[in-house]
Structure formats: structure tokens, C-alpha cells
Image 1 (cartoon, rainbow, N blue to C red):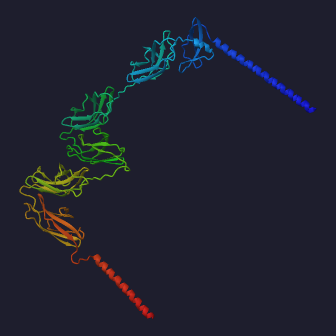
Image 2 (image 1 turned 60 degrees about the horizontal axis):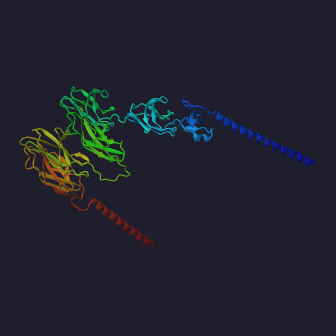
Image 3 (image 1 turned 90 degrees about the vertical axis):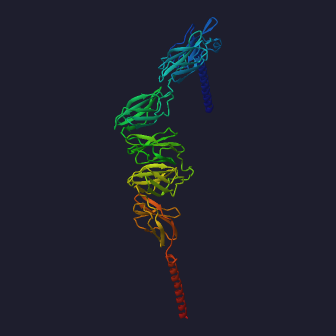
Length: 636
């Protein structure tokens, strides 16, 4: 009974809950209807009869513009939201859709996709037509411009057939802001989104002139240069020349036309002048060149070009070597300047080394790039001419193919100088090692003191030279060097000669003979039949390992014999001897051949030692056998 009562109470409670839920649902439904009707009412109230125009103020993100519409004689208003970024009209969703079928806009929407493209002294604008012409054809577009955002004013207008405009009333470097609006027969609608552009010039100032140098002449300084590598996109019209008496203190001296040289004759002796030059085009003056200097010294000029420049490439390195100029201009060479470029005759300053250094290692290179080099010499007067151009391509050691190694040749052999009637004859033999490349030239050096020689002449691949620029009773010292594609090789031994009237070099020594011994050779000879009218002062001994391959070995002070200890047994040697008097060295004697081996027994010391050791060993074996035999008999 109790249980039934409890079940009834629970059932009544559940029914009450269901009824309450149903009541809540009815209230919520009524509330939803009320809200829906309120929304519709708000939409209707927002429609204002009569002619309304959109506000001209900048719309906010939740603002809208009311646009007038016409349909027959009745006025219908409609509301559009305006997107503050794109400025496009967005239809108010509160207005019933049937009104849109009867709606015709009176004003065009804004032009779309406004773009700007700046150039040199102009800006080009382009845009697309509005998405709506407002029910009436577009008649024109209006262009607005300003130098700050939001301050654009009317600039110009174009017909409706054009959707572009070129603004040429601009200054390069100034930023401009633009907007465009569309116009039909009713009126102008709002402007497009803004765009900005900065016109710039495509012409720049030129780069620095190349290869600038200054050289002192007779009462003037000559300046020369090459055109800049980049003219900035405009023709060079002038060059500005700067001069000073201190480095870095140059001021403008002269402006010249489009020429590549200038002579400064407003100079004084013994004053050092520093120069620079710059190029000018329509954009203005470009960078200055490297500096050059010159000192006007009477009787002294700039040096000639360095010789025999060689460039050798390896992995990220180029080694440069050269020889001093033939002519130092009468003033000691103080430094060498190296020029480098990636195209021939476009080299620019790279580095300077102090004389007497004649080499440079360029480690600022990139593999597989060809580099071109020139070198110039400078003395107290100024910089001289540049050398011939050489090129090199550094290459990785991992990929570089092995090429035959070419080196400079060894010294010429058998060099001698002999005085004759009014001249000195020089003769020599080819180097023993040509360095892997044929000999192309020989350089002949002369001086009036030993070790004080300068270049006298460069000759082709010949083996003699006659020096007729000599005076009597003057002693001259000579040397010669060979040149191949790798450069100049070592100098020969020194030879000397004195031109004495009525005297000549002696004839050849006579009856050269040899007596061999154990690792030595004794040479003997007789004096020349003709001493050339001047006493013999010494003899020169020559030795070689092949016929006519003798090289200088030793000098003998007026003796007619010589012992050569620098030989080896069982080796063949060849010898010659010459005589020397005051005019110089005479002809060589006859050639003799000597096989060096000990006199007497033909067995060497080593053989005798071997025999003795073998005998001692044999005696030992016999003694051991005898002792063993006697011991065995005694045991028995």
C-alpha cells in the first residue's frame, strides 16, 4: 500500500515537470516571434522616403550609406553597407528581396584595382571599370593626386574609354598618392582605394675613370686615363681634374671635355703633385679615380714598363712575377703597382709593393674566373707605363688537370767576353735546362764595376753579341741570361774585357793533356802561341760529362796545370782550357776525354776486402772441422 502511494506521488511529480517544460517552450516560441517582428520593424523604420544621398565622411566599419532608387513614380529607398577597405556596397540583409528586382542605381560605384607604376619623371596609373555604372553609362574618370595620404586633390580627367593615365608633372624622388573616381550623367560617386608611387631616375652618376696615371715631362705633367666601366646610362660629357701638393688634399684644377688626357704645365721643379680625375654625365659627377703623383725633376723621367710579367694560377691563388724596367728614367725605382681586372684592358688598381720586390701573390681571387694583370714601375718622378697584359684562371686542385711545369731557364753556359778593335765580342752557349719551354731571348747586362751591371740589350735566340759602344782603356763587366715563356732565368758567370789599342785576346792554350788517378785528374797544357800583345793573367778550366758540354770549373793564376779532385772513378769527363789577358778571354783549347780509374791494379779496395773476408771465413770453417775430428778420435 505504501509502495503504491509513493509511485503515485512520483508520477504526479513527473507530470508537473513535463507541463512546466511545455510552458517554457511556448514562452520561448512567442519570444522568438516577437524578436523577429521587431527586426522586421527596425528594417522598415530605417527606410526613409525621399531623396537621400550617402554621407561624404569616411565610413566606419559599421556605417552604411543610403542610396536613392527610382521605380516609376514611387520612391523606394534602400540601404547599403559600404566596406571601409574596398569601398564596395553591401546590400542590407533587412530589406526584402523583391525590392532589388525593381532597383536601379543612380550613381556608379568606385573604380576597381587601381595600380601605379613609377618611372623616370612619370607615374602611370591603371584601373578597372566600376562593378556598377549606376544604370547610366560612365562619361569620364577623375584623377586625384596629393603628396600625403588623404590630401588628394583633383589633378585631371580622362574619357570613359580610357582606364589609364600618365602623370608627367612629377619630380623624381617625391612620393605621390592617387585616387580615381567614375562619373555618369547623374553625378560622381566615391573615389577608389588609394595607391602611391615614387618616380626615380634610371640614370646614375658614372663610376670612376680607370687606369689613371701621371708622368712628369719637360716642364709639365701628363695625365692619362681610361673611360669608366659604367657610364651610368648616360653619355660622359666632361672630366674633372683635381690636383694637390699632399695626398688627399686635391682640389679641382680643371674641367675638360670628353677626352682621356690632360697636360698640366702650371708646375714647378722638385714639387710633388697629387692628381685625381672624375667623370660627369647628365646625372652629375661620379666617383674619383685612384690617385696618381708626379714630381718634375730636370733630366729625370718616369721609368719604362716592367718586363717579362708572368702569372701562374693555382687553387684560389695567382702568383705574379716580373723583371725590372730596362730604363729607370734616371731615378731609382721605388715601387711597383699591380692592376687587375676580369676583362682585358679594364684593369684597375689592386696593390703596390716596394722595390726591389718583383713578385706578388694575389689570394683575393675566385676559382674558374679569368683575371687580367698589368704592372707599372714608379720612381721619384712618377708612375711609368704599364707592362703587357697577362691572364690567369685559378682552379681547384681537386679538378685541375696536370700540365707540364714550365720554369725559367738555367744560366747560359761558357760565357766569355773578348776585346777587339773598337768593340767587345760576347759569346755563350745554351743553358743546360731550358725550363720546359724554348728560349726566346737573351738579356745582356753590362757595367763598369763587378756586380754593378744594368740591362744593355735584349737579343733574339742567338749565341753571340758585339758591343761597339765602348771606349779604350775602360774595363767592362758582362753577364747574360736566357728568357722563355716563364720569364727570365739566372744570369751567367761574369766575364770582363778591356779595349786596349793594339792588343787582343790570346789564342787558345796548346797541347792540353790529362793524367788520371784514383778519383782525380791531372791536367797540363802549354801557353798560347799568341798572347794578344798583353801578358796572360790566368787560365780558365772547363769540364763536362758530354762532348762540347763543358761548363766553367775553375780559374788558375798563370799556371799551366790543374788537379781536379771532384771526380769519381769509372766516370768519363771532358775538358777544355782558355787563356785570359787584359783585353779578355781567348779561345778554348782542344777538347780531351778522360776515363777516371785507379792506376795499377784493376781490383779496387772493396774487392780486396771481400777476398780477405772470404779467406778468413774459409780458414775458420777448416779449423772448426779439424777440431771436431781430433775430438772424436780422442773419445774413441
